[in-house]
Length: 269
Image (cartoon, rainbow, N blue to C red; front, side, top):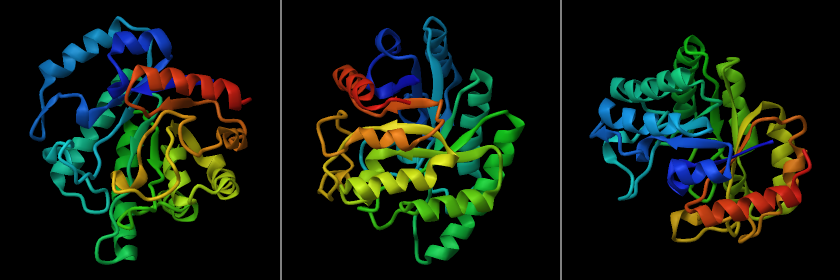
């Protein structure tokens, strides 16, 4: 079992003391001016990373409409222009160089026509998966929270439909238990069924907690420390045969430590 944490949970040096992997959160590493990658800034981070004993995963650019997210790095995978492909391909290329375990990709937005948006996203993901294949990189399409009705791929069935239609050995599923808990309304049995449905395609896992209901703060997607919300993490034992990273997508070292305890207590994989 590999336990990791996102790069915004602490410095690389701090994370190196507590986890085996770091998820490099590309939009928030501070390595862009607008949508232009600043290679000198990136090299500084990579130099620090080279002094740590950490595997890597990576979180690619995505859609967000909040002040804390850099507007020049917004990517809706259901509506991509050349600049968006450039951003995503930069991320995938870097992942290849670092021998990164997985690159997380968000589904796009519903837009005016759900089926048309799904079709565009599937086409875009085929292109990204082909580029990932050239760079020996595995992509994980993440399930989103249904508390935001603008999200695609919240339900397990729609997520798998897209992955199956892309039909690439370089695209699987990033299972996000916090998002699934919101989609399932905090219902333990529904959450367990969600996991069983996607289990065979899961190549990466995100762990964080919430209350399973919509709130005015990020539609309920609070990214709390595991054990402080309503999720029963024993459902993760339904991920039969999973050997990848359990990435703690939380905001502090204290939450990382709480998450590690929760994993050890509830997961027997």
